[in-house]
Length: 107
Image (cartoon, rainbow, N blue to C red; front, side, top):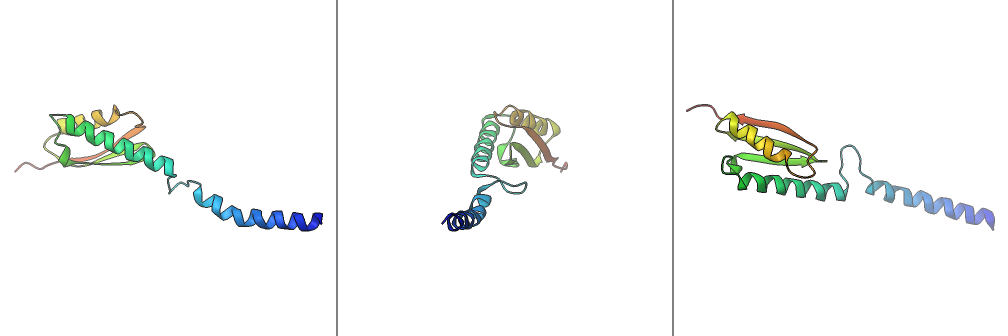
């Protein structure tokens, strides 16, 4: 009876392991909570860019992964790029900002 119970427990544990492992975040995959946090940060950064009269928010793309915000796009001058980075850094939850914003070439 004890051997049978031990075998049943081991079998159930073996079946449950893949289910539990699928819910665990990995280096390349975010957990559901991290995804929601990142979506919130992205929304707040975009809102800060829209509210700022200096930065043209449509020109700056925002992506967030595990609290690291990546800014990209093309702006008119380096002041706009610096301002976008400064605004993103002030948003709660932002761990760091990666600036991939480029300056538009002069016409």
